[in-house]
Length: 139
Image 1 (tube, one colour):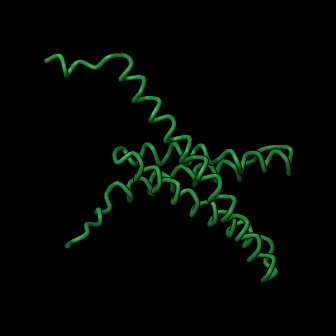
Image 2 (tube, rainbow, N blue to C red):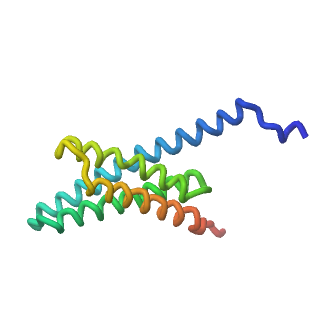
Image 3 (cartoon, rainbow, N blue to C red):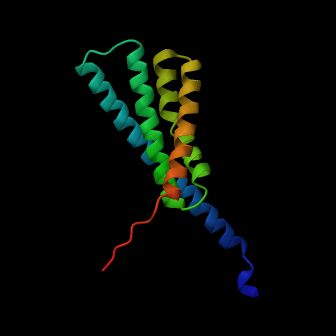
């Protein structure tokens, strides 16, 4: 029976591992998002894309980055993929928020749409990664 009782040290250790995993995954997600946004910008410059299509490319890059972030979070935690994917993707909204503030001096409806897209794609990525089969090596 005594082995079933958890001490405060064990609980705080579990929380710190969870928080560290979420922050590390969010940091990787920000790097992935910066890379996908850079690639989207390079493609848009190469093909001389402007206007509405430029916005669509930016949203697609953010969605892909959030999906990957959610998948990484789900794989790391191995449970509650939707929750951890959404949290990590919400933390990756920091990069677009800073870009909106620096470039436009305000945050508009476009950012609200981008934030909702981040959270939704992160949750979907978390669900996908938790429900994927594990690969086994057969000998």
